Length: 162
Length: 162
DNA sequence: CGAATTTGTTTGCTCCCCAAACAATCTCCG
DNA sequence: CGGAGATTGTTTGGGGAGCAAACAAATTCG
Image (tube, rainbow over all chains, first blue to last red):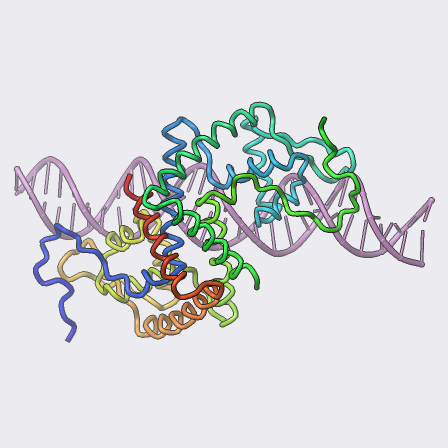
């Protein structure tokens, strides 16, 4: 009954697998696109002799645009636990990109800010990110790109409101 | 020059942060949508008394549709290292969903297959995934959903071909 | 047959994530 | 004013995902 999986098997072409319903699932497409994009992001930075994750880039942008931010506010903006944020900040601080200033108004919180070196680094990172974005969008028209981002935001909103 | 961050600060509304260029970045939208979708996936299964990750679901579908698959072939299909796959298979096997059969033709490889319980479980999982997909797509028309999946595939192809 | 390759596993390392506990600080209410 | 309660940042502990390198067993190829 059980038909042999592969009659004439030499081993060469490694035929593509049957993916069943997966290709019709949004979650599946999302994960695949995301991991490909992540890989290109890492490659872009590696080729420029830099090392940064998408998450770190987002964090730096947030700190630059909202100087004086507390760690709790930042953790909320990133949707991560405040304890998760600590080692990430430690690393960026050790790289000299960011500082925890003492808050003059609240002794509990730290006022986060980029260092001058952090500002310069972020400017370079932003250029790399632009090149990266251009590459991952190379198969899409400008209209498609805008629509894609808009649809993703709708998904975020739909899944986020629970 | 430097205007004080917040003159009349009671602390109440926690105004939204300035996200700078992030909202225009595909990578950013992708990460946000993905994490929201992941959360809904987990919540859907938790509410049904089940525990499964999107990755595990994809793995089970692949094994079901390609019975006899080797671990290497599966790892390649999932784009992960073969050593990463081992603990994942161990866990699914410990749950009784999946078995490593001895391959009759190649003593090195394992022929992966779902157990009967695994088949039944996957059938239930597939129902949960369908409900989950319906929920995360609730803000999108059928046309938008198809277009979104198609655009994601284009991104995967663009970023993947390096 | 012997050398080279492939497969699955183990070990070691890094990173992300959360939950719980803790000290320091602030807020609020009596 | 003073103490109870809440908030913030940190540490610790646990889990999972991921890779690289080393290894034994088995296969393939010269």
